[in-house]
Structure formats: structure tokens, C-alpha cells
Length: 411
Image (cartoon, rainbow, N blue to C red; front, top):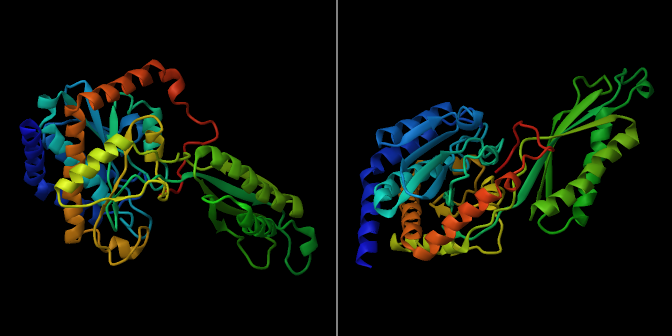
């Protein structure tokens, strides 16, 4: 117990010693929001801070210019912290990724202070484009997580919580191609691509009543035609489908696809469908790690609400959790009642409460990593998991042939 208290004291003091730089990092990310795959300043800030702390940093990993990996320590147990730092178009850090990213960096810095003592390798993985492309999925497929025994991050929110799942999600780009004609002189000579989209949207609206609980369909029309007096020859849209599991997602998509096919059949337009980015799997939070994190948070005077059986939105951390013991708790601060993905949420991203969330989130994650390393049972479990994954590596991760390497909306 005395040894554990000493380790906890070292970790806590390490976060305190880096607190100024961590808050400055969070504020810097917030002040200069960069959208998916464009997070060049954010990645440079994080890489520079970790290099100054003695980490070995690799930039542009897995052919993603804004991804990075930073490591310190040589132990056999690799603890991975996932840093997010992409913003949303038009509304900045409305999902709090400045808090997420800075907390992950802080956790890596703090756990590094005891890495040699505990036989650890600390691995900070900079994961771009959670809101769009799904950077973690790409990095997972590229082998960046292969040696990671446990993966962790915290996510900004109005409250502290643990244990929730997330919805699986897939996105598609939809195009109808018709035939233009004069809308007044000879509309009968045209094939109206906008009508095809209207039929499809109507069918989707009717389908929603028949979808199982947890299945959500939403989308936007990105092109409805160019001139009001010309029968639209082309319309386009983006559609997302969310479900409680990847299996349910696949089943739901078949029904959604039929709605778009109905639009083509009813109007004579041609339908083009293409997957948009990576599918996100549902999140599975490790119960032992969740308990350790909740205990660590309690040491800081915070209480996490258990959300087992509940679902959040969607995250590419779900794909990581399908293969690696993972936690993705929320770290809370006052947002005036605002929810994520709104300008109002963005406005609280540099508040004193958000700054405390950065430091408390970093401390709780680092304490969790330390406790996993100090527990013979957990250490053995996690290392055995890595060995099992490595033995089955050719079968463990397969890149989906239904998802091209293009952006996708997420979050």
C-alpha cells in the first residue's frame, strides 16, 4: 500500500508539474481549430511538447501526415493513450477534443515518470480525424496498436461517466443521375434526379417507424440541382446509419439502401452509392479498467456516473475496443447545459472547469495505467492478450473492401 501511494504521489505531482503546459496546449488547440486530416498545428504542438519531455516521436505515421506516435520507457507492458485533436467545421472544438487531446498528453507525461519503475512503455498515439475519416481505424489497420496492451482516453462532456457503449456507424455518399430538360417547355423529356432523392427521403422517413431501437438514419442533400428552370440531372446526398452493433448496422443498411433504389426505380434515374470513410464499431469498455479508472477519479474527489448499458454517439475508439482492452470515459465540466456538437459547447472549452478536466483526466488515466502495471493479475491478463493477438495477427484485422479511404462524418 505504501508503494502504491508513492507511485500515485509521483504521478499526481507529474501532472501538477506539467499543468501550465497542458492547459496551454488545450487552449492552443481550442484557439486554432483544425478539421479532420488538417490538424497540422495541433500535431506539431503535441509532438513538440512530448519531445521536450524526452519522448521519441514519430510524425506522419501510417501515411497520415497529422498522426503521430510518441514513446517513452522500455517495459514489456505497453499502455496506449489516444489523443484526439480535430475540430468540427464551422463550430470549432464543439466536441471538446482540445480537452481530450491535452488530457491524453498529460497522462502520457505523468505515467512516463514511473515507467521504468513499473516496467512500462508509455505510448501516446495521436489519432486525427475522429469526426470525419476515422483515424484510429486507419492506425489500427496499419499496426500502430499491435503492441498496445491497454488503450485509454477521456472525452469531454457535461459530466463524469464510465461504462457507456457507443453506436456503430457507417456513412455513404449517394448520387442520382438523370437527364436535364427545360422545366417549362419539355419537362417530360427529362429524368428528374431530385425527384429520385425526394422519393428516397420519403421512403427513409417511412422506414424509421420500422427500424429497431438504437438504429438511426440521418443525412443531408449536398446538391439538389443548379437552376430552378432546369430539370435536375444530378443530385447528391450523404447518409449515415447508426446501430447498436456492427452486425445490426449491416442489416439496417440493406433496408436503407432499398430506399435509395426505390428512388431510382420510380424515376428512371441512375443510382451511385459509395462508402464514405471507415465504419466505426460499437464501443466495448473493459470492466476491470473501468473500475480502476473510477477509483482513480475518486481519489481526485470526482464521482463517475455508471452508464453501463447506455450508448453515446459514435467513436472510432470502438474499433480499438473490439481488439484491445479499452476505456473511453467522459470527463465533465460545466457547459451551461450545452451538449456536444453545438457552438455553445465550444464556448466552454477554455473555462476553468475545462482546464481542471484536462488535469484530472490526465491524472486519472495515468493512475489507471499505473494500477494496471502494479497488479500481477491485470499485468498478466493484458500481456497475455497482446500475445494472443500477435499469434492471430493475419486474421485479427482486415481492411474492409466496402470502405474507401475517404473522409466520413463521425462523432
